[in-house]
Every structure is written in C-alpha cells, then in structure tokens.
Image 1: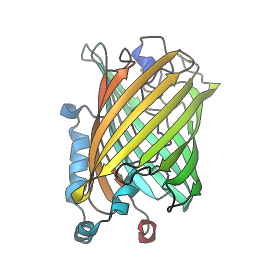
Image 2: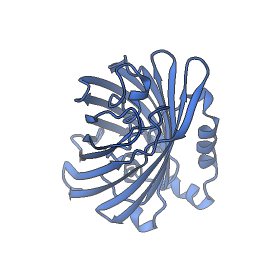
Image 3: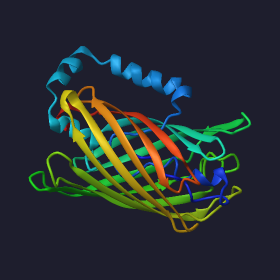
Image 4: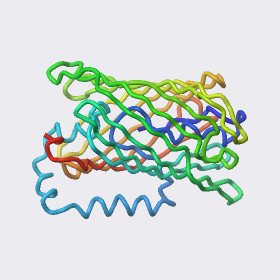
Length: 304
C-alpha cells in the first residue's frame, strides 16, 4: 500500500501528530509496498535479497512458466489468500525529520472469500539533531470479505473490510496514537482494458475511545486510492497509484502519486519498489520510497 500522510493527531505542524495513519494497514490487499530510507536500511534490503536468492529449486523452475494470472494475484486487493507481508517504510518530513517503520503482516484465509490479518509495526524516528526514538507502534487487526466476484466480467470483484487499531504505541515519543480507531472500507477490481486493470479502494477511519496517554486527538479521515498496473515480460510489472487523503478533524488534505515496479520471483514470492511524491500537502510529508515483499504460504490449490 502507498504510505499515507498522518494528519490525525497532535498539533498542526507537530511531527508526532502525523504518525497514526503513517503505519496504517490499508484495506487494499495488493502486494506490499514499503517506503525505506534506502541508505540506512541494510536490514530490510538484506532480508529482501535473501528472499530473492534462497528460493527452493522447485519454485525457481516453476517460476519460468508463470502466467499473467499468477502475477496479477500479487496485485489484486480482493484476493483472499494465505500470505505473509513484510514492509520497511520511510517518509521525509520538512525540517529533516524522517519516520520509518518495519511492519510484519500475516494474513489467514478463512475461506475463498474472506480473510483476517494482524499488523505489527516497529517505528523509528530520526530528528534533525541526530537523536531519535524507537518503539512498537499501534497494533491492528482486520478482516476482508469478497462481496461479489465474476472473473468473466469487466467488473471482476467487489470486497469490503474493516480494521481496528489499538493504542499500543507511545504518542509521547511519536510511535503511535492514544485512541482506539476503527476503519471501514472496500475495494473494487475492474478491467476496462486488458493492458491496464484498475483497483479502486477507499476507507473511513474514526477514533472510538480516548486512551489514558497524553496527546489524545480526534481522528476522522478519508482515504481514496486508485491503482493501475501493467504486466511486462519476464514476470515484471509496473504500478501507478494516485492517492487522496482527507483529514476531516483538522481540515487538511494530501495528494500523492506513486510509480513502482516489481517482479514475481515465483508463484509464491513477489518483490516491489516504488517512489512516492506528495503533490499536495507537502507541508506534512515531502516524499517517500517503497520496498517490500509478499509471500503466499498456503496450500497449492490456492494458487490455481
């Protein structure tokens, strides 16, 4: 998912107030997109490199015969399938503040139409004076359900979902918020042209209770995303993702555009990297980078 600017907590212009939505697990179920501070993320890069070179020989030979459908599965947010996602994220803020996070996110398919997931973030904050803070972020648990699916139709699938964010981070140092937050939304997959399928997704997030930590602030945000992609030869793909973020509580808006590329290493593993530019709302974030992986760990019949 594209990293969203956080405008939902704290004082206007305070970097601590930008974090709640930064670590959000979007309802879109696309291949994990992450935003690293590339020159200072050896752990994330090493993990992805090891994943790329340590595939079993059977999967390596299998990847030579991947179909377009095998590649598309990594990008489709309406696919309910057992998977594991790892992400390293980073955003650059005015004033030379950098926020990054490591997020692990296992998905468990309940059946062919529904799944649950857990998001576990670890947040790192680097301040201009060389100091910083690190700690667990706000854990979240979510679920999704495919309301309608017709592979023969241009309107291929419609899915709905929810996510609950728990105030497990520390708002005093900026690693999380101080309220329980509920998010609801959905995703639509349609194929106006065979060259550029489109996913539309959106969600509304609302704080449902005060925490007992300092810095409590109301959260009422809307996120809209459009993703289109094109599958290239040799299992590569390109993705284009414009996103709109509206903070109703603080009367702020941000618009981003991301362009990315990735590769399906096998039927089970895909890697992706991209760049995000903030075209509106740059007073909150200026730019970000993305890097990540998705691994399907379920039985073979899920990949048919």
